[in-house]
Image (cartoon, rainbow, N blue to C red):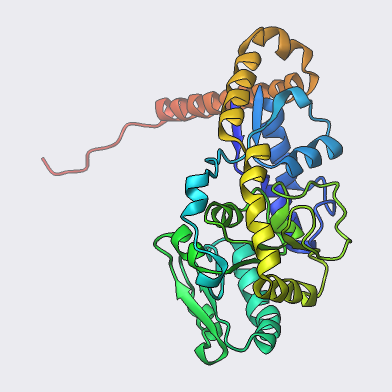
Length: 332
């Protein structure tokens, strides 16, 4: 059996409460997901950060995990030629479905903390916040006089991102890979992001989260989530104003996608891993202690449940036999 994990929900859920993935390793959600993975012959993990987290904190055999990120199309020279240049772009953008808790949290942080600082240094800048299922409570942040717009659902996310100069991703929690960052790279738009947003894309779980924000070797501004977001605002201002830094960021997209998210390489690796998992399957299952353990417990639970259902049905049938016949009280 193969399990495809879009993201590790325990990590998402835990970081929502304390912004620290290591805060609770054995709660009910974690145990349920881990048991599900251990029962499988192979689990596909979308983020390298989550691969590292799972293997460091739990007794999961690496042979049943496979890193399978987004299968991203390459950024060709033709694609790059179609991008709008720095001077043809303007304003900031945030995009994310409001029903996803990390996005709604990010909107509040952006509107209350980050945007006032950006606006104070770039008075003519605007920020457009796009997202499906916009709740009524989000309208409190629609303040055109302050350059902040709640723009609702974007019919084409990449079209929206392609016209903006800087993409903002101030996510404080969440798991998996962030599609908004990939969409921005595909259209040549640099992103200022938290380390949470960068996980699995530009950062691994072992990267230093305490280093100051900078346009580092990735030429992307990555800000530690435990900051008060002053640094995030300053990084956004610098990237917006500096044509040099902006072009450095854009130039890095194509080689980064090619090196870490090459669709052809990932597809080949996935097929090879599935083929390997299928070969000598019974022998591999016999050597996987944890898989045997959880499957044995599952089979026992199913056995006892089926016996309980059978006994319940038998008792019901016996009651039906012992029941006295109904008396017809109708008049002749």
